[in-house]
Image 1 (cartoon, rainbow, N blue to C red):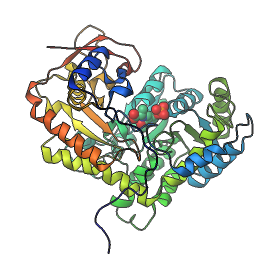
Image 2 (cartoon, rainbow, N blue to C red; image 1 turned 120 degrees about the vertical axis):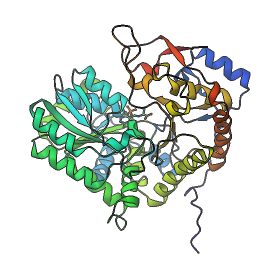
Image 3 (spheres, rainbow, N blue to C red; image 1 turned 90 degrees about the vertical axis):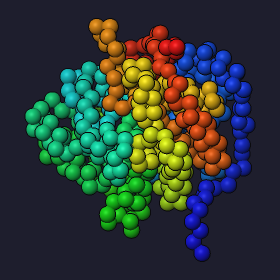
Image 4 (spheres, rainbow, N blue to C red; image 1 turned 135 degrees about the vertical axis):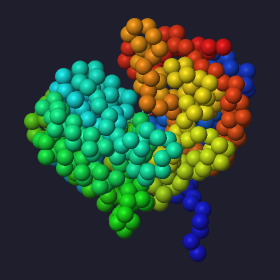
Length: 459
Ligand code: F0G
């Protein structure tokens, strides 16, 4: 017999209590957080879908590895274990640990000196874009047209638009510092890129003498989608596919807090000798010695195990199925969604849900706050608060391409009944959609404003 139900391929033997709060308590806490869910405390949140970054559960094998982590400053055995695992997976000459993804990005873009240059990506995620811009480079997104249409069922909406990439390289090639593919494409709905597209992007970049890099935060989920959807890939394991993805690239940055299955950590892997030397010098300046890169030895040890567990087909099948389960549930309610379901998250088209709220009045923020008030659920806006910019002349904010709300799933953390409960909260929020109103920013920072902005309701 082959059961149709896809189960969690693990047992749970350690638990954390789940805070359940009253509507009055939540209204007060949201006011105190200036209507920005980033400013809430975890004890006031029932289901936290803010991010899948560093919020998952580690396995017993990972915890066991932590106990034998080697805390030697230079030459730690845990580093060499990690290096071996990463080399087998990705094959790059230099394996540089960092404390998380954005630090890898900052070091890479500094070492490549992107000032005055273009970084071409399918889509840059917010920290990636912010690091390019902070270093005076220009982050340019060249994702395929279908990616901007939430209803499109294209199986690889994370693909790069090859025509636009080619013409950009031909037109302004001398200004291009590197070509980057984010897998899966977080800013565009957790959508995968196909192997065919990755091969073509690598080929185009190399033909123009440009390095091709991956932002590999969710490489295993991307590999699973290729295994499921791309013609001719069904007989290859996610691990084999991931190995090919990595080998197409001259290097990669990785936030290990996602598909590394750890709570903290990152990687920067490179082939180029001179670039790696500069990167390591910068690493010593801000992160630490190259065999620990800002992490404890035990963190390196847990990551070495996580990078092996994450390509297990049973885990990936469960992971993708659990996100799809919520997607199907919300679709049945009539919620406007980004289709198809993403790898790590479900994205709601808040602009469409709330046509009465203008993009510069943050429909995504309105939805996040409704979700919190209704059920103590925390989600994150991926729209104009995150990607828009204040107008220098004091007009409306420059708006983002889409007004999305992301429900990101921590790995191995919530069960099906949590999702069913979430579906009930969603149904109530959907019913009340005509009454939602927008927000105005009261206070904001210049860099990555979504994390700290203070808002107030417009009604
Ligand atoms: N690249 C991608 C595609 C990401 O999604 C993130 C983080 C980073 C880089 C930066 O990594 O957080 O380890 O410094 N994304 C998180 C999120 C924060 O919620 O999607 P980091």
